[in-house]
Image 1 (cartoon, one colour):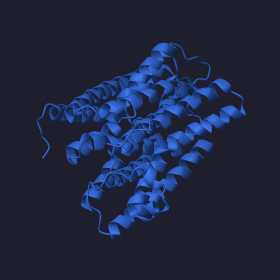
Image 2 (image 1 turned 120 degrees about the vertical axis):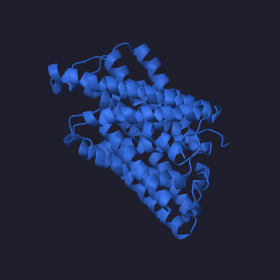
Image 3 (image 1 turned 120 degrees about the horizontal axis):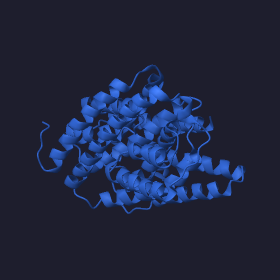
Image 4 (image 1 turned 45 degrees about the vertical axis):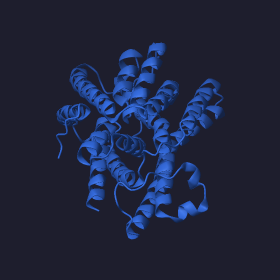
Length: 266
Length: 107
């Protein structure tokens, strides 16, 4: 019973952080389930994918008006992302746990770098743009071939390591395709659930989803995502992002060590 | 607003099934982690599967996992109603890929 409550608490923390920081929550769940609960990485990934869908649902439930995703843009990119996610999840069944751990460590380091850049960019943007320009309506997405190609890579990574992939999708839309940051973030939140939905059934069918692990974790994630969604407008997340970078670096190092066969967690 | 209502309804049903299933398993003294892997989706179609706590847990997970597909169906219906044929075709393509993900042989 203690382990079940610990899974619920872990899910709640992942859901809260995911909703506050615009991530799916998988980036916290996979290391927590493998390093703390000592679960095989494929079970952790299967659980994480259901958790990403729960975060996406929690955010949708608490979404405020005026932050609507561009569904048409999301679905166009999802053509590539979901295809990549199915391929990635099929590929994950043939890779060793060590390679998956190393891959996950790389994704964690990339996310830490992305979060650091986002924090810096927000500070600069606060000085020169208003909130409205983040959500301006008169834009046209461009660089479609590159955007679709990178979206496919984001989907493959999502299927391989069980994360939503928002940390790749937002820069693709914002920096490459010229979509305003606010719309790119909302569109990415809509997309991560669909991407996880493409992979989760592959893990389910392969027998990598364990209900007694998944259910308490996902319940925690949903509670955390709804709570995080309600807290978000009242919180300054800058300090949270800085703590997150340190946490991600620590988790990345742990996963890297697991990948090379050094077990540091008791 | 419709997306919010859909997310809330589907998630509520899924969480209710998960909670009922979890209570059944806990009361039955079968709460040993990590427990067995999830039942195949085909097995959940039999009415007796929903008599057991494990079946309810799996059904809850499957319903929650299908939420993104429901959201794409909602977008598809909206595009068809507004005669946005290209967007409807794209939504149909995404749905096809999501369905493809369910056709994977069990290990």
